[in-house]
Length: 207
Image 1 (cartoon, rainbow, N blue to C red):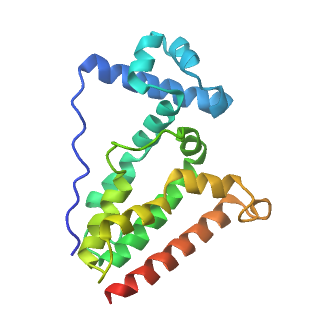
Image 2: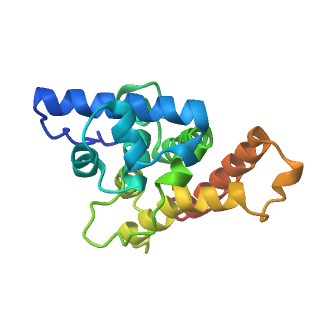
């Protein structure tokens, strides 16, 4: 049975800060739905929400930070499925099956939130940041597998890179997979098949 995973407890917020955060996220979603992601700026979000620019900058830091906050908020349902949902995505399945299921779920999540994920990429260095939750989850499952001779921490980072927004956005947006001939569901199915192949090939080391 897979090791329980704790995703961390959110930092406590004052009631007014929590209300402002929810207002800003709701307003940002409304602006994106009305005019697309390109219309969303720090200034416009402040104006439409009725909050000061300083509040918006303190909350998000950059325009990309708005999209990252939206992505994180949208991801909560997926996190709950991982923590307590039915196997193989949730606990109770062999780690290889959980890795395959997680990759499939993550690919679908990023496909559904493609424009937000793409806009969340700002090219800032990641030095000093906590590893993404994907990497933490994948590392837990790899440690359970304990592939002989593998550097589990490094391998977790490499597998995470196969799932995260920058790579998927590049492949969805660029010419690499001949997107002009494929719709989003077909591309997602190809990503899922590729992830399954990658995980099953890597994890044969643990057999």
